[in-house]
Image (tube, rainbow, N blue to C red; front, side):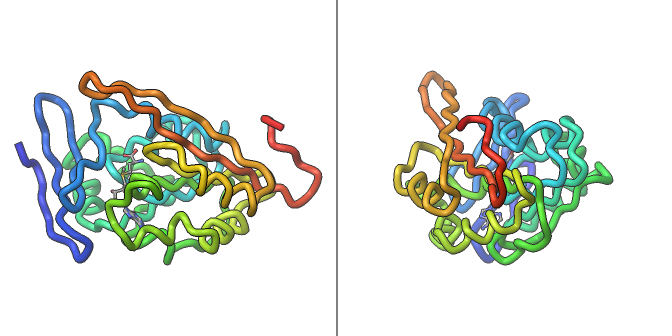
Length: 217
Ligand SMILES: C[S@@+](CC[C@H](N)C(=O)[O-])C[C@H]1O[C@@H](n2cnc3c(N)ncnc32)[C@H](O)[C@@H]1O
């Protein structure tokens, strides 16, 4: 059943519900559902504990943002390209989106993360597309490009973390991140979805301008 649908300048956004599972389809491509959110939660956990002030690219169904809030984040700013999702969050169209919107520590901003990178953050989490290997929006190529990733790193506090969600490992992205940050960590997240196995990839880098060493080095 379709519970919400809207056309946006970057394509159609649809929220569907089957049984008790919410599903998000963006631009005709399955983006995610609420049945399997291990990697969305792992993305939030990769911000560190407590997460501090976090900038998130991509609201989706709100699982990453909600996890950050549950983990005691001081502030969570979420930039979302499809503005109907923000409206639906404020209307509480799904319980999860509703609780993210209602939390006084969260701020939902309509726009493209590349154009809304301001301020200083303890973590920046990017989950706006399937990753550089399988883009839903072609214009998101710039999200995975060195220039933007370098800007993200510069917007972090010392020891702050930049984490990028990908539908599969991307050696090219890994080497870009290694080049700008000195070291990159791959966090593999195996999931089973409707009987099929996938291994999603989270790439994490840490801003180190002084003597700080990331815990995995
Ligand atoms: C897979 S979903 C994010 C899932 C989210 N982590 C969660 O827990 O539900 C990707 C979201 O990013 C949004 N998006 C796509 N490109 C974007 C961009 N350049 N800037 C901000 N949001 C973007 C999509 O509209 C979609 O809502």
